[in-house]
Length: 272
Image (cartoon, rainbow, N blue to C red; front, side, top):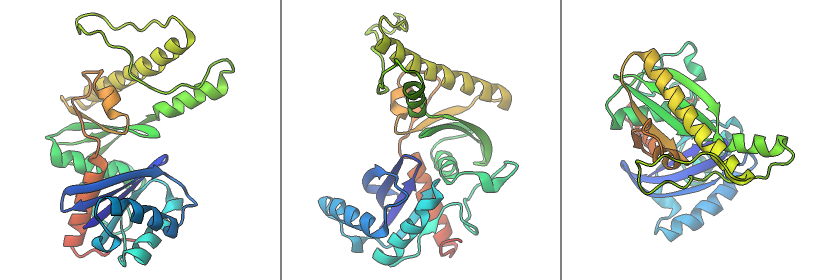
């Protein structure tokens, strides 16, 4: 079985795959100082709850946008699973798609994995919106080629900035607003107190960002495009705007698994 590790700026997801089927998945906060030993203790306990052991893992694939975590994740693979981890984006690793941007080496591992996973599951051309620490909008062409995109501040970054820089505003959590039972009725966006005004501004402001950027991407691309939302907050927004056609929360991991399968079948050991 494969242990697929997707390390983002905020959270890291560990998923066990049997072929293309996920057996179990766990999430922890991304921590540059967490050692291979700490990962192993944590993983061993969680795997045992699913009837799995460390010896069930025969390969490891890693996608990380936090370079400082890579050494310990690779050490986890070599020390506890006795394998050399395949690292997405490393030199010599074939993503299986064309990277059509001016500096291909700058394409983030997560964005490449999103493009690969989306192309496998949906007919293109596509826009993939990944709701993470940053919110990224990526264009995937009909043949699977990655054609660039947009990077915007994630919604939690926006919330933190509002709290930290506006002295009289409290910290709030993002949540979906109350929706009328009759969808023909307009949604109320005018807040009647500070908290409701903040919730409305953050949520509907972000919906406006999504709808506006998707509209501009489609106009610039010149074709209709299918829009896929992924990441932890995708479902929250996907249910409140027609700009997102599908929500696919495990898209990055699916792409990671596909890239792993391609490169192992070609005999590539890991990448440097």
